[in-house]
Length: 293
Ligand SMILES: [Zn+2]
Ligand SMILES: [Zn+2]
Ligand SMILES: [Zn+2]
Image (cartoon, rainbow, N blue to C red):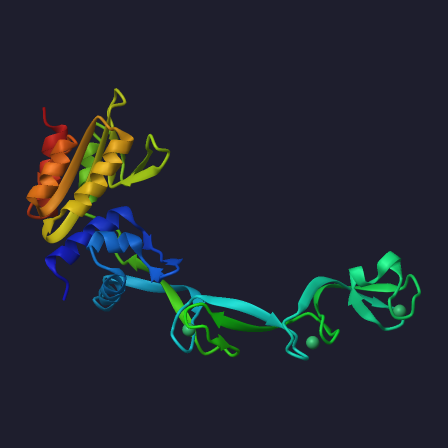
């Protein structure tokens, strides 16, 4: 069952992300945008996304595949090439030539254009880029590929059975309650939802909403929804972005409430805080705040 918070986050997500795509790093596969929105760790975020698929709110599409270690499940797999004839790892890559005498070697074996076997020049057929085993002399197009797991050290030859699918997640409906907010704000501002601004540091920061009025004055808005309180971590992240982008006005919307510490931190950075029970009320309050007076 979806909680009220889940539903709210889905509304927010509908406005700001078409598709949640995974990133792959040394720790594995993750969905950082969803992690931030739901305030969950990697594993719980994937569980949440799967739950949303089951609830019929999201769809998932396979967009990639990862080879994983059959021993430990890690995706940190290093491809290793070897000779399909003798298994040697000592192989080189280069342009392969077949001499008229039948000898096949790599381009640089034919020093001064002479065949190293029959010592004659000319009569070469270009076989394209291939590999040669330096142990047995075999020249081949397709090396044997195995994978060394960088996590557990086990090397695997047959990896065809351990391919892990990688998914992106999409919301089924793309309309959001926040469309209403956008339409209201458009009466007075140039609105970007989401918007990005390059900070003084050179880093580009994303905001849920970036507004510019007729005089070019800049307002930034972020929304965070939590079960009970929006905490300091979220507030700190916003404060850092505000410090770097130096807008004329910064508004932080906390649903349903914000912790005292987080509120103090934002106030010290001249951020206006809006607390609202739900998204509808938040929209009303922000419209009042930014369109009133
Ligand atoms: Zn070989
Ligand atoms: Zn020859
Ligand atoms: Zn492993």
